[in-house]
Length: 305
Image (cartoon, rainbow, N blue to C red; front, top):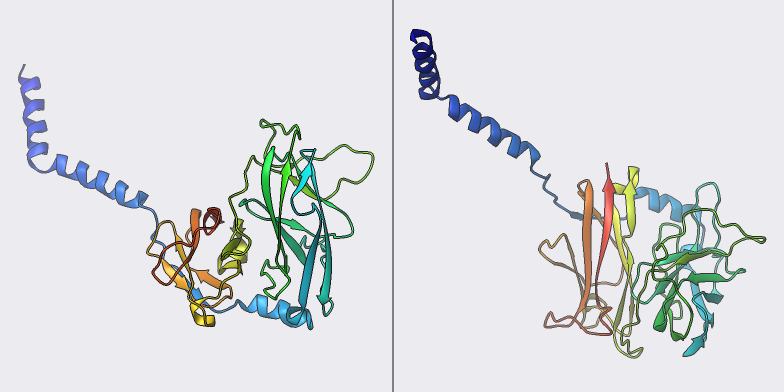
């Protein structure tokens, strides 16, 4: 009995001396340790490695490539879930040619965008590109040429858009969104991508149209030091180029900022993890310029450190 009483007295003394407070302090420290790292993004100049790539390419970055969509034709009806894309390239190329370096897996290429999905890279224009498992309905196809680091060419004629319709194509809604495994075939499989179900917006080809290009996917290694925002702008001029429009951007619902000249920007200060990047085309009053819903687009990217 005396032993039990002694234990109770010792326990009461420990509590009175702050045992509970220490426990709470430890819990607070654990909470603080789990708090996410604060992200402070800053616009920086074009990275030196990009400048070095540009210098090694000769005159290519002064080229003015123009594209023509040969297939699918405008307003075509396609009776297959596999839509073949064929392009012609011309213009003042200065050595520019889409081609993949199989060692680095990079090179000049075309950004191919179905509806408002992230782009797919098309490297070999001598072979058709396939959009696979495309759902029935109306679709919009946008294309424009890009450099190996995914910066778009912005000259007149570089951007092309067509609408087409898939009818009774037989797309499988349960089919995976990507085709990562090897394809068994008797002939080389054309470049292409299985597409998630999507529908065209009510795009007016005569009205201002913002096409989200970069960023995309996963960034790691040196690529996380400065991540590029780039886009294609049709039928509009930005404020800094003598027009009335602005491109508003934000990351993870942060305070929006603006791009007033049609050129890419690079951002540094990224933290590891997933981030949502939003681009919007807005008028002088700050209102989103509607065009099929495509002038306000959010993409998720992953930064690995």
